[in-house]
Image (cartoon, rainbow, N blue to C red; front, top):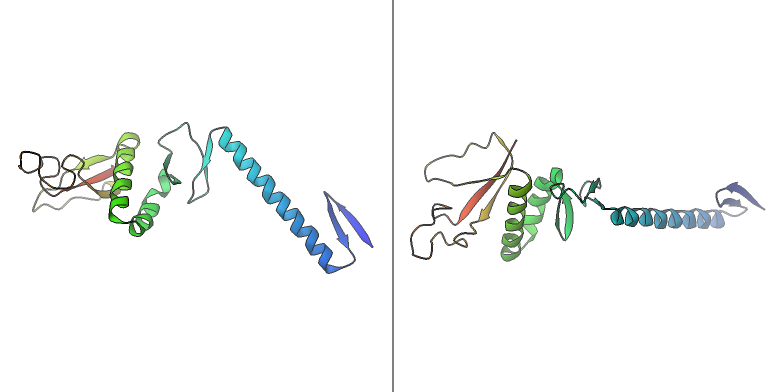
Length: 162
């Protein structure tokens, strides 16, 4: 005996066929949901890989794309976990791209460190230390003098203000 309960659901006389029906329905729902997400992507809507929120990709400051799509709100936690898993070259490449994106879209500033001073981080929403692109992390310019962009440290601090 099989009882129809609507929308393709049916209750059969055996437990196995009821489970099969539920499984088939879940597979179909999952497939339909995947189609909806693909359709949203065609319309210019992308999903953060961390919080699963959807964002318009027409807003370049909303999402950071590099293998994974990450929204601005999720960047601090994502960067903390991602940077630890990368090799040095990959981390430096990605942090340069992230630093550029933060400066371009989120008012981030390059803060030079000065020997003997402590940086005030109370007004920082997010910060990271990146290799200085001007001296390629050497701390020296072509003439052999100390790099004026990083004060010879080879790194700069990128700070996004609150």
